[in-house]
Length: 568
Image 1: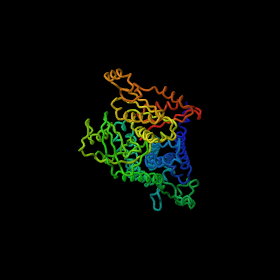
Image 2: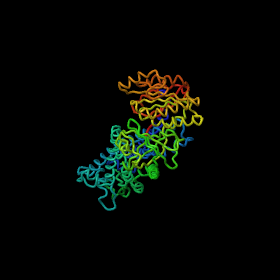
Image 3: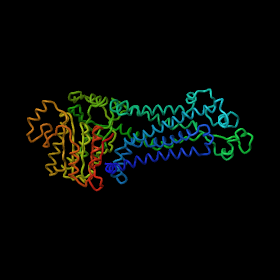
Image 4: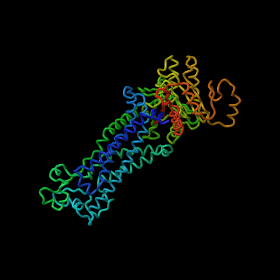
């Protein structure tokens, strides 16, 4: 099992370990530098090791803030996906794990942010202790620097009578630090699975606080609170020699009063490139949002599913891609992802939208889909479309054997793939690379089969006429039915066509036994590279991922299951 997991996840493991290694290197290298650097010798007298903790975590924080925007730059990822020469095979699959990497980097930001904030709390308290009346020796001498003419201060806290909170709010670094902390807490708490699933709009709006986060991060170091000895002062004042002569600094020619300055802010340098890239991303999205989208057809399906056919100038797609849709009459800011259900050969592009939240319910209502057929004279809302963007399903045709698994409305991403297969069969075209496709659909409501069963029936007929019926093997599982449906199914069980779908392939009742299914597929295709593609709930995703690891051979020359999950 560990060997199979390593074979399937070696690239992901390499990426994660590389990211972790860079973080550890930056932290350790920066920590050691601040612990040994002569320019910060006197700073360490006041702050101790918390100086190094604060600065090391700050560098790691900057590094992760540089990375956090890259995985959510969809056009950038689509560009990388199209660059097949430099992004092939297992490395190409990493682009489908962009959101996982985005979350991993977010955890890195949170972890280092906590260390940085706690270290500076201790630093602020140590600065206060340096100004206390009972402070003595070198600590007291350093804290009093800056009171006399021609002196620069080292301790930013100038009096012990001012509270730490007030001192914090009197500096640019303190105010921006509080803003960064509050923004990070809001973003992280609103990104929990419960909030995203139940209150997606809340997650969407709060997540855009990242703009305030990055602005505050860029100016956070402008206060230059962390101060060190200037290079000129280091040449004249050797801290190792002069530290015990602090009472004679002004009189001793060999030990003039040391001069200090704040460290130049650097966070903006780390984040500048990704921020510019993301700004370009938003400009492209803004431009696309103002391109005209013509809605050519609206269809209402059972189970509260809305089908939209649209046209847009210069719109080009590939099977398995998705788009972002905005409806200004519902929200001027929200964009929601939907997989395309049309084929590239069609003169329109389509999506199927199920009512599963406030925004989708409002969209169905805007199109008059409240349990009734839409009026032909009803004015339709304006839609904005961004995309298309590449997803993991775009790689289905790149494997010799592909296994496509969907639950409920998760079948929509595969509609485009199957339609594309239909057109290729209709035009007697070959499917380069693909020799067999297994399709599984697990659905609870029999009414939901209607629109998709028509597509399967047409595909089944066309492939049979072309002598390519062997290319597709589909399995439909119905997990929910009432007593009347059960009686009806039993009475028509012996008929040649399935009573639920009208297809030659009979519908299965209950849930699939994935052990048996994967075992049979592995037996049918020894020494094959098999792509497994899934769109559905997280619980089943874990099960399928486990099956891929379990039935992949430890020998790289044996059968290998490569798991791909549709992510937005």
